[in-house]
Amino acid sequence: MAKAAKPKIKTHSGAKKRFKITKNGKIKYRRTNRIHRLTQKATKRKRTSRKANYCDKTNVAEVKALLPYK
Image (cartoon, rainbow, N blue to C red; front, side, top):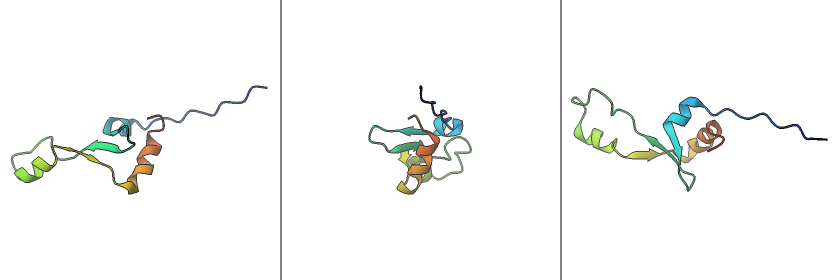
């Protein structure tokens, strides 16, 4: 008898646009507040949001559950 295949888990469409999983398993995302109304934001605030950021260990399991095949 052939075994019944488990149903595939859908990837969260919002999460796949916002997060990337690195080779080491860290979750990388783009910081917020860099799209519009930049003239009124402080230079330091804009400069710190240039770099990508990594998820905290408390959120890693939740984000990885949204991206099952990454």
